[in-house]
Length: 138
Image (cartoon, rainbow, N blue to C red; front, side, top):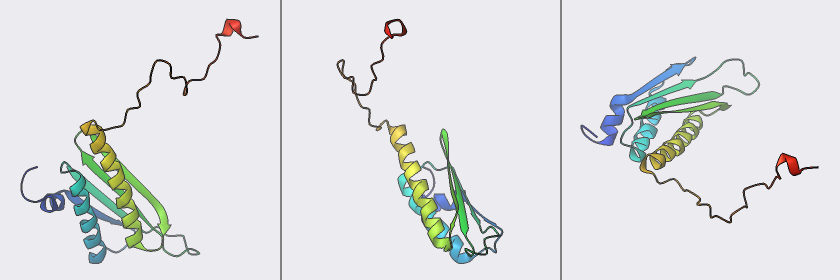
């Protein structure tokens, strides 16, 4: 990682977009704090784009907020799309960043080779279905 703390680096790669809603400093601040937390899990985040949308037409349920996050890390792009389901924009942001954190942790485990491999022994048939060859079936 080059140049400063992970928080400073994350600030330089973070882009926040508001769709169908007025930009809010409080929401931007909340997104920045959650993005800083993501930097703890991987120092190799090259790009982080966040879209916050408030779609119209949900008059019975109130304003529902959706959040999309796209992270670019070496060799992979991680995407999270939280469908509009929450009336609280901060709760929507938290849920989306939790999902992004889980995907980022999975990416880091794969990159480090720490994915569980379940070795199969020669006599292990627990996961195989025994189907006789077609000629022997009646």
